[in-house]
Image (cartoon, rainbow, N blue to C red; front, side, top):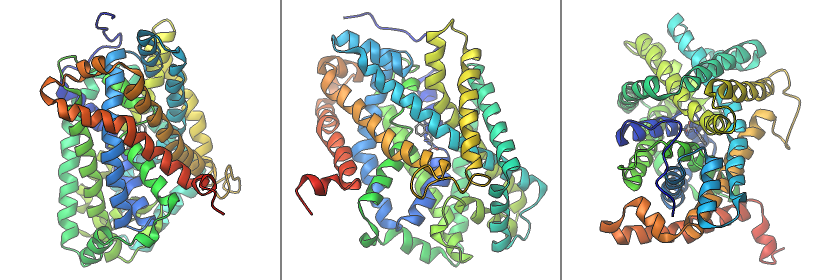
Length: 462
Ligand code: TRP
């Protein structure tokens, strides 16, 4: 066997920093923007239950598997997979899974950056005092006005990508580590504050009913696929982001324990976001199925009327922007790490190329919401929606399936056990291995087949 490798990109200074950075990657627009609106559109409590099952049965085991690959390979996902495949004497085509991730990352970041730009815009509006005494119609109008304006959308998308470029090009470590340490706890506190506020509103009861009483009639194969896609999306799984962060994890730290923390914090944040947002939705009489505008329409209304709302509004949207930035960076990092390894080692050049390409694709995503809204890439879906749907619901689960298969079946069990340092927890290790080998892949396959209607065909159904 080979010697222990070391990362050419540097390492996190401790396991705690890894947890913070990976939590920074996981906690983002997926929790605060995407989760609430998906819950709203897909039947509330029933969707939440499916999502939690996916997190536990598929998300957690695959997170452990991804970090394991990263820390054993110590390179970008593409090269880590290639090295590990070489170690095992199997085909180096496994690196294609890394490439799939790079493509998925491009697609995700292109629309993610557009929404990150909206967060910036809202931070700016909060500063201008635009939310003071805003009515629900005005709040809807503000959001619709933003989305309908190609100029505004592209301006803020561009700013978002510039910020990402600067951070990733600078070689994340110092600035990022410090930012994450300071800002993630603050975001958390603010969210708890909003939940407490939600508790005092008239819509709280309706919100609890919506989030706790499952209506399973709202569930079909498509909704299950959405819940699975959201589990991957919110945990940053399936495209190499967590893998590349794992490549910078010091050898002394426990992979399963860190993974547990990341998954726990991320899930808690999503649930808190729901508890913060739905009471307001019901109080002001908005539709929970409002769609992607949900957070951007609801929260300004609260900030417009509560004491200290002006200040809290600024803080919230600044933090939302920060959460989006710390996630966006991790979408950029796998491709940038690869290009740095593959070229003369200039991270700045690599970051400029990758960020530039994604910026271009993001322009298409942004324009598809206004100037090009007549153009459909998939039935009923413009470029933005199609990028979101295909990357989250198809490419991420597919990437995760390959990761589970690779770690569960292709890596030698002894070497995985050694990496996970499991001698005192042998039974837990076996449980994880079993889930990674059988349960997670089967769940992903089953959900795929069911959502595409293939299951009916295979079973000879009509
Ligand atoms: N998890 C982040 C969020 O919830 C988004 C994200 C960052 C992501 N890196 C990723 C999603 C990698 C999929 C893959 O906002």
